[in-house]
Length: 247
Image 1 (spheres, rainbow, N blue to C red):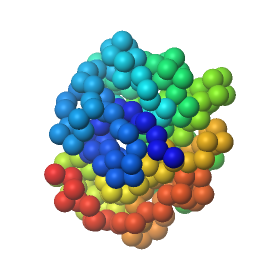
Image 2 (image 1 turned 60 degrees about the vertical axis):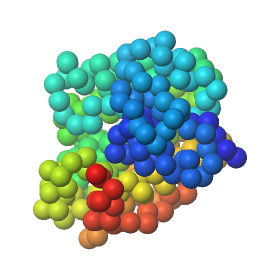
Image 3 (image 1 turned 180 degrees about the horizontal axis):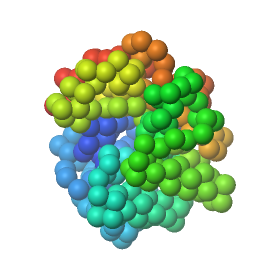
Image 4 (image 1 turned 90 degrees about the horizontal axis):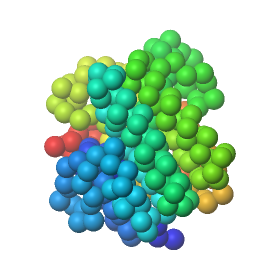
């Protein structure tokens, strides 16, 4: 079955890979971002604060992939609150009003930051969260309201705690210097396959929290079994495969 998918953050590192994989599988894809992406003609350019524009973008869509966010720690009041908290409110309320059947929400492996360093491993979604700092705390808000939407509105919600898909040369260097970071690496191609699997997951899947990384080189930091069984995700790459795709 082909789906109509709105991808927020469609011009980002992961967004571009997700768009490409969805298109390859025959899904109809629409983007929403503050900057254009040449690989996607059907794109709304704007900010998550623009509820009217989001409502237009949701028209004719049945699945949301919400990637747009400030992607790491930043000024809480000036960046994280408007982009990661208020933005989530507008996106999910717009999706609810449009009657979307599924939302796939990008969280972060930073939700379990301290367990990554102290164990036990691998980390499962059922383990208590140990957020790194304010960015990770905004992802806890996203995860909580995602569950609320699944229960209150009957929307199928998949929360994806993502590994590290580096955005620039500095982040590539950080991963290269750390075995642990290499074990939580997420290549663009694997990210595309993962999110496509979330779109295509069975309709009866009401709510799930799953981890997504590429294949660990040393040991599994996150348990990927739920991603395998629930959304059919099997990583194909490992560090440093896909680094050239970061350009």
